[in-house]
Image (cartoon, rainbow, N blue to C red):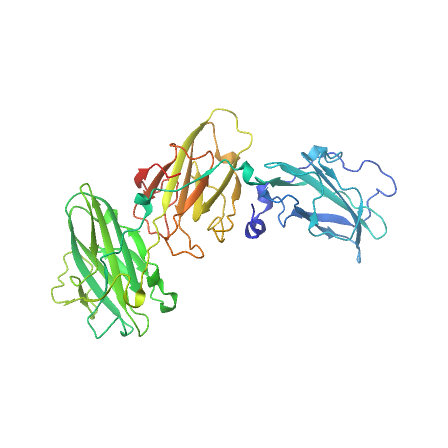
Length: 465
């Protein structure tokens, strides 16, 4: 299925007009001699010059007229549709015949039922008010999509929850500098916080979840790992950020440092959890009264592990997670990378990728991004309708081993809480052990790395089907 947004972005680069074709006019009678000036300048199908993956049974054809003379009007049209451009002279799909009509926009196809995954070529000519025909337009094409659920052989797959589920915030508390009642009102200002943690074994995975009313900058052992601008109107604290910080931690002591900014007078708070996974266990280190804080701007080295914060105040616990003015906030799930390899032993004539997701996805084939869509499959209410995309990937494949990778991330689903619905991907061939799912390392949820292998995956498991 092609969305209107995708159609408007489609260009003639998806295919080239064919030249050197046989003449489409069968005779040279007086009626058939072209009029000087009246001609079809360009054609579209469902608003696109060469749409790929149309999922409508009666696509609408349009054309733009041009003339060297003024005040020229169309009085009739004639459309031919065939399975190849050299058959347009005697079309094997549909011949509308001469139709008396001034309509040149969104003329419905009215031939036999279209076959799925088929390319159709078409041409049109028109007559002016004096009964003189134009030349036939240059042959154009459209290609049908799957045209119905029966053509889908794919199944939904997703990464296991152990890979993508965000760290639990149970046990964390909202904290702030001790100044009155910050959960009710605090000045518009920045406060600084530090805490020490210790990893008792080799760190296999580390994820930091942070929310601040209103903005923050987070550091691990002096290195900035995440930041959010303090804009109160956005209420960004309701969607905590999740950051993979594995590469910044190792066995032994470590320091977490955060600056939090209250953008406007009102409630202020900081909530954070560091999840550490070692060979032996998984531990959580939450914001609580053990954190140190100051309201005086510290020196530049304040995020470093060796900085002396003994003169700082003890942070004030305002409310446990799920209570206070902030209520229950949920971090988004981490993005996942799904990947499978396959071999091709025969020459490749044509290849199409039909794909969609319950969430947002970006596909790569043999390390090259597929298509130019952003935030595919596009905004939708996933409970009612899911659009899919069709991509021509013929040139991206080669004989022998090939690899298909997809980065899959959650999206804001209408009617659900962020992170409450796990993103899924429709795949074909159906789900099999050849598919693997991974989580990227050191990648914020908002901007995961590509599937081309820019960073090695942290952990990989078979996907859930």
